[in-house]
Length: 310
Image 1 (cartoon, rainbow, N blue to C red):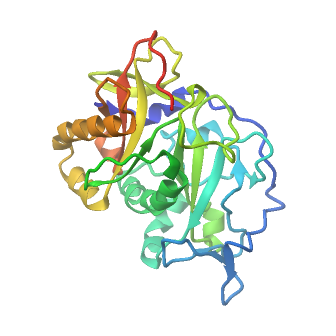
Image 2 (cartoon, rainbow, N blue to C red; image 1 turned 180 degrees about the horizontal axis):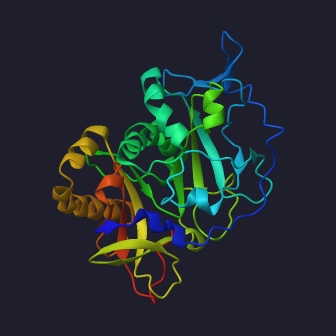
């Protein structure tokens, strides 16, 4: 089943006041995660990468900072590649938390120049760059942040799988202004796409609570995100699967042939992660041009069915 991932905008995004920090007073980079470069630039060295994130002449984002993203920034149909929402402490209302900042190899940085200055990954070339360079740069960071929700699928081509909620990973590049000032990094956020604000700094990512459950309205034509209490909702997303790079490339080359295999992967993933659920897992695949190796697994439900929680 093909999912209209941009339908996530159907959910009401609570846009509240930002959580600390202003454009005039950027947060200082953490001394624990930064090092001084030869030119005095701040750089964060991710544990799984040999390339440091470079701040240029601007402040480097920090893991542990929170922000309030706008509905436009969260609407996947706008395909924004950067956010101007201020980041700071997590003691005020927020819908995003930065879980890591990773570097860009020089070759990738050159490829991203046009994308950053365009500001949105809408045309095919920019979309391809986003799905093959930017999103994969954050995958290891997201996997670590969501490790408590991990599901062992015992499938060689699956790089990771975890229990799914309305909290999802979102990558950001520097703004065009910061890019021109020398910033070279990808900011990896976990974002609450739901209507209920939650303190993401203290959230137990290994559980699914009713207020964070992710639901769909699904039929033979496709699916789109809907609130779980909406009368049109007939499915709950239980797992999110990411294929390894080689399998992703193979699927992108022959996308239509992947549907049946995706169904089996989802059936196995739901069984492994939710052994008490007696419904088969089904695949919700994005449209071909938006496929970056990640897709959702859901089970059908009717309005009277209780939500699956864990």
